[in-house]
Image (cartoon, rainbow, N blue to C red; front, top):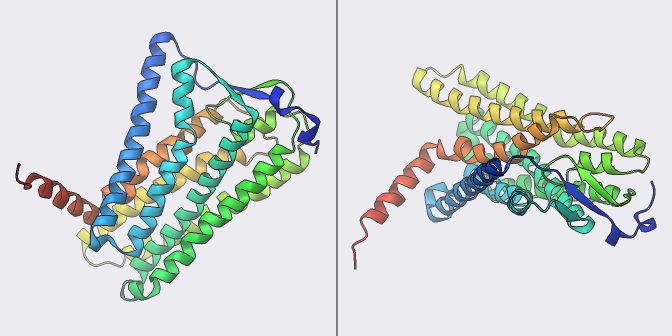
Length: 315
């Protein structure tokens, strides 16, 4: 690959096309982006607050949900604030260094999300298939041993990919047909030979996306098999409903991400931006609802907190 040292990075930059709209449409888009960002932040902060304050929620399940809440707030904060700025000001330029920095954090948090969803599926598998041994198996040490590698492996993988992109050659101001500095868009914009990088990303995509998705779907297949053996129709219906919503999130996240990156040519397609919206904003927005706010323990904790505020005497 051509070294980045051959270029003067001060003369290199990117023009993020984002979403083209009319003047009236721009204000609507700005409002939608802000609302989505606000809902994600508030939803995850609410979950984190409840898990920290309510002792009954200090379990392995909510440990992983807390990790997911922290992650999703970081994840959307790598892309949406910049998109808000672009939409509000019309300034689509981003410097080379800022673009590479955004790429690293995006890859870091996106990969961590992929690994964390696997740990959460493992936790649900043990809880439903081995309920009598759940607390013994999923102790604090095991939870840390599952969560820490998810963050660490994602950071290492993001660093490797970012270094590969840093070694590519970029000349002048290049257009990025997306709303953030996307890996695929940067590869398309480079004038370097990309054959090795294409092969690496295909293998990496199997490790980061395809294998985790298969592991999750396999665990939920075992869970569903166990659910079908439950005698109580009410219990079976509730558990099956939760599993179904989890599977939908998994399919949307991995399906949209793999559709973008698991292509040898790595040439941008028109639908890439649509898929990016799904795995960058839609899934983080749905995660608090699907994994937490539909949960009985979280709902009860929230009701207690609200009723507690109402009973506070006025001064």
